[in-house]
Image (cartoon, rainbow, N blue to C red):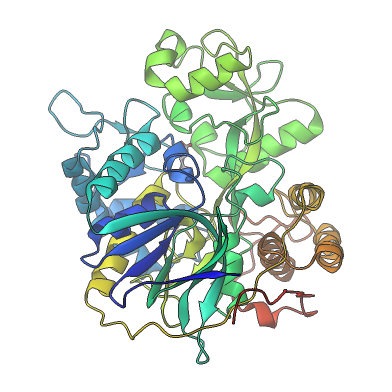
Length: 512
Ligand code: SIN
């Protein structure tokens, strides 16, 4: 028997307890129920962000300059109007976080102490205690959310969107401690993270397996740019799942990339060497690893003895694997890190289905184009989370309606391991038509055996769009089409557009 919880008409259901969802909740004047599959801090990728939050905060910087850098790395398909909103509203949102109590690192004059990361033409990343920005921002927001009488929380994993007969989204079906629960709401905001966990090597938490993307796609929402998955160049290669990150700020401090003989390789590839755009560095490191030459991040001179204090998270991860980064180069490999694609939304975070909004990594605003500029994701989460709250505060939502849904099949542990391996092999840093066809065949086979769960649907969207984009652009590199097409646009698709038809075998369960 499926339990039903009907939220009052003025309530907003927020799926996801990371930065985007919590920031939206805190900016709502309406009550919010935040649904999260893990306790605060554990399940959200935001809490793992090391570098910080990029914004035009320093002397000599400007939103225009930040926008120019964002567009320069984005592969020509960013939405320029969205980038303008991001960079213009960014500094104000960072000031709000500071006013809420986030203890950003300060310089001698009390201004923000800023780091430089790849693709930025100047130091622009506001940080906390070196590499603890994500953790600290989340701690501050969680404390505010706990203190707020308007925000309540429930632990459950959303599986499917509820929809009325007209297609309006009316809440979610979720799996909670006591079984399935239908949570009916007049407004649903998806802020449930990305897709990195669909890959064998990722920096993302295990919960990031494309649930929000798949739920929205199955409900008929327009999906944008699913083929654009960003690989972080410097995950620490110590055989862990998820792989710990060595923040790009280390390269901003002067750390170098070398092969196992200590030879640098980036200077021959790009004029900005170690600070080249992330897609270029990730491909270079991938090739080093595949060729057997090895790839290492050498921060011995750039950071050295200051490691424990300046980069405590990276230091702890290295030391736990017996690598002392003060005296040894850090073994590295690229890892799936961030999804530029997602649920297509407008400048106020509205998706293509009535009653549905999305923000954070599961949404695709167009801010990042084909390749996200480092540390723009936390900024996007607060800028667009704030805009969604402002829109919903001005919206009189219709009464909550009776609605139906489907319960997606669940992929077993062995199926998931097979999928993650196939995604890493065929939809990773370098892709080919043959490889992507093998991936799609694997997805079809798994779907036939186990039913089409959220993970398979999300992988299907990524694979199909990667197969269709016969060019290389930003993070999407096709070894069989290595050049960029003369003209290109964003991908926009619906699940129903994909051919052949996905073998959906949803069980109708608990949806009277
Ligand atoms: C990093 O610190 O290198 C990650 C920052 C980001 O992904 O934006």
